[in-house]
Amino acid sequence: MNKPVVEAQIRAVMPTKDGCAVFLGNKEKVFIIFVDQGMGAVITMFMRETPKERPLTHDLMANLLIAFGAKIERVIINAIVESTYYARVILSVENEVTAQRKIVELDSRPSDALALSIQQKAPIYVSRDVWDEVDDMTPQLRQMEEGGFEIE
Image (cartoon, rainbow, N blue to C red; front, side):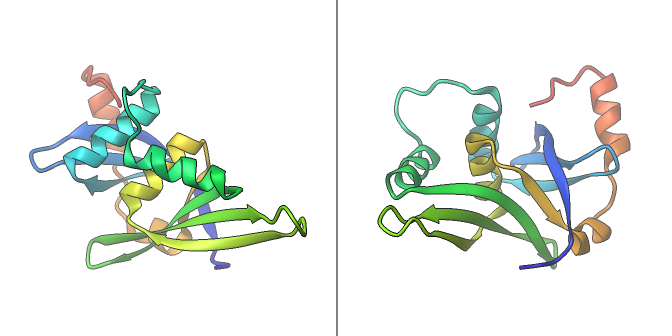
């Protein structure tokens, strides 16, 4: 995948009537990806580094990656089709025997990709095609911040 990309961060997670709105962007632009309430809670827990009694599914995934010598290099929100976002998780895997590095791209729901990126402190990118297509929600985010809404 060699499309141009824009670096982004999760700027806020806000509960909605039907789930959560994840505000994703940078100083130039912010857009929203809607996720279910459970994934919104997971993303928020990773953002706040909330301790958990037992491992969550994403913790299990991270432990599996570590066990196999894999690391999340980055995640990319790479497409939007009929209001549905698509994402890729880019992994690097080191072969202990040959010391060769392999890059693996996995298809992912954006919510899972974002949760893993926050948990693993991996960068988030948005393809330029998606970036150019989405509406800028910066004024809405700014209004929420000024209104005292607790971001995250």
